[in-house]
Image 1 (tube, rainbow, N blue to C red):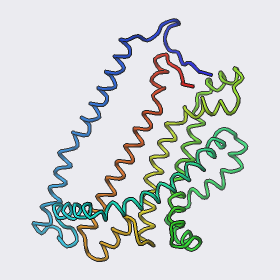
Image 2 (cartoon, rainbow, N blue to C red):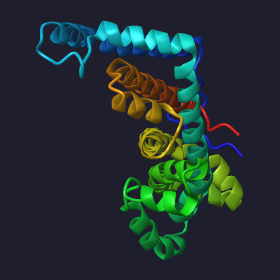
Image 3 (cartoon, rainbow, N blue to C red):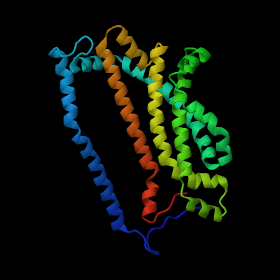
Image 4 (cartoon, helix red, strand yellow):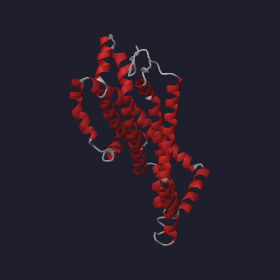
Length: 290
């Protein structure tokens, strides 16, 4: 079943000119975003310049804060040796498994809690209690119960992500337009089709927002877990470099984490835009796809 959100006059269909106009608007929006990024470049260059000259002029101790050129040199050596890719791959694998488990648990549970009030009332106290318990405070518990192997690190990343996804899924479900739900019900739509064709598409922006927070929290948590008890991963690499006073390697690892976080964040933004293109079509008289 298709639900039409028509804001145009009856019988009026968007033509080639409307399509061209939407494409132009999208292109201008992309250029505006690029312009926003470009506006921040001068300040970023000043920051990088200060990073280079402050240790060389003695403003900062170069042993603990080496010049940017030395950090980039160490970063290049680690990339060339394959060491950096190995540790980053291990950390991303741990974070991805924990995040995937969080998605499997949080999204269906969020749909149930957002849609059925009795179920939400029965589960909300436990969810809120667990949500307000820091994953960092629970790290020793996970390690004691699951050991220092992969299981404890995956469990920590799962715990770090699951509540961001859960709460945002609940908010997304509760934010669905009641008129859409009534219209679908009046047409005899089953609960499964209602979730699949109305509730889920409408909840995607909120779910993706929760995913962005969850991914960030998962990455932070796995790095902390690797610093605490691990022999591999980017967190272990940073901690080991710090203990050995290989500070250039340490800052290279931190830069790598920043880049990975930015790539993951913008990747999720791209997914959100792709997944919610139907909203633009709906505003122009389109429909929610089957």
